[in-house]
Image 1: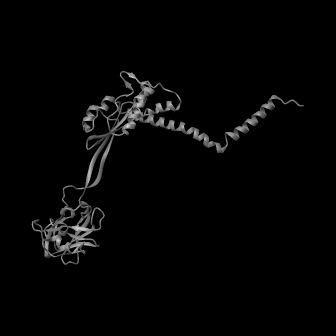
Image 2: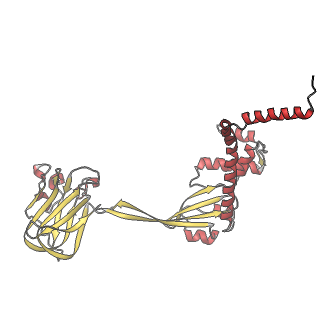
Image 3: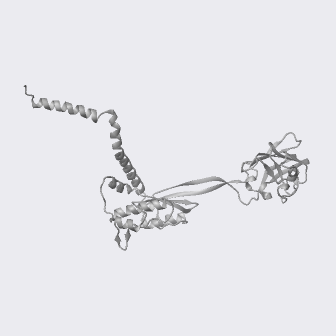
Length: 354
């Protein structure tokens, strides 16, 4: 039998090993396993870079004393906070605008034009009869004033309009000078098109219009007329729009807000100021990543150390407060009577918490 040299056996072993490695570890179907194994490392690496950049960014504005940051109270003015705590690490702000219903109008809207116009016929056209979406137009009084603004030219004049809801709620009820008689003292229509037209008898200079909507007669504000226009005509055929009202009873409510961020080296606290006063705050701990990395690396930490109790306190404080406004955390609750509590003792003192 021929003797096989060591070199030949080594080459044979290497060939077999290479084939098995390629089949078992370098196959395409096994690549996802390596990707899955690398995913936690990539997540920790990315989170670490993000935490590092955040700390560097926040530290450029200078570190603030934690006791000063904790002393900021709800309702405190922004100028007082800056004077006492100092320049924040960052500051941003803006204006929020939203449309809201006006209060105290009693369901009455007044519409004036710049220069008086001569008109015999005045027509109220309604495109959106209510705020609630109800397809019913309700007007308790339609008043038309001359250039002096004293005489109501529409009072008692002939009026026509859309088919009324009931015979008792005809167009004449909108020019009778009264809103105190309940629903029967109003013009009501529920068929398109919605319009109310007043004949002044002769061409008269008109300058101001007053519309008393449903809530002027005691009904819900949601039944007030939302969108309409007022047209004038000298002959009853050619009408010119004098007034357009979209969202009558709505105004723009503007709220100024600013967000100040303070950093004490471990905690980033953002204070939201609404109209110049503290409204809420939010606290973030960029350095909690270090504790998470220690846990996932399988390195146990002594529960009685400041490091671990601070982490436990920050986590429980964040969970209970929902990371929203409240009393800022002022110290690790795992210390009692001048000595630190271990994990088992701390759990025993807080039944139902794990």
